[in-house]
Length: 286
Image (cartoon, rainbow, N blue to C red; front, side, top):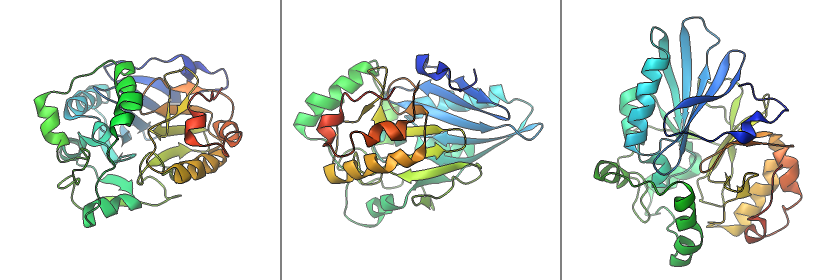
């Protein structure tokens, strides 16, 4: 499938096994619905007999083992290089498999520069309130399919962003990414700093092809895309919504829910950028 203006991406349902969900000349995107969140691969296949891969979020260890097996099978006989493992934010459902991915794939882990505070100070990963759990987190879990992590997964997650637990031992010598930085080893892919859901949240965008990995900034359970309602900083979220208009994205690959396509996502969110995050929950990006 080729992502273009016909909007094929909008009809995709991610599977539990990795599969190609978008393709263009010399590249493609692989996606999978993990136990608790989505995982993606960016594949640069422009070199004959070789592939450069970027991982977007790592889910849980169970997910990473499945993704690693896919990589070895899909590109058997090729020179495989995983150039970057990008974490959109340090919530355990997105980074629980980070250590395993780093060890299996021998690739650097990349995080937003503000995430460094969680490693060097007494700061902690933001914890949802009781109200957030009942109003926002549990419904997302239900829509994700009520995936149940294994004990093996939870043991890893303890070191990778469980609420109020510092992400100790997640990785040594990470690459810190600032707003506008390129993703190491992947041409045309850059970082957009989007705090609000968490202080460290980033999205990854390809402006040339109008593709956006939105992490937990934009979800998609409505079929048209919606802003995440679990917000730790409303002012930052409003600013991030306004800033998103510059991405020119038309194809969105969210951390939860289906990938979707539509008119310029950035232009659409401009219409609601003056509203509070609670007012944007059912905003359609179409």
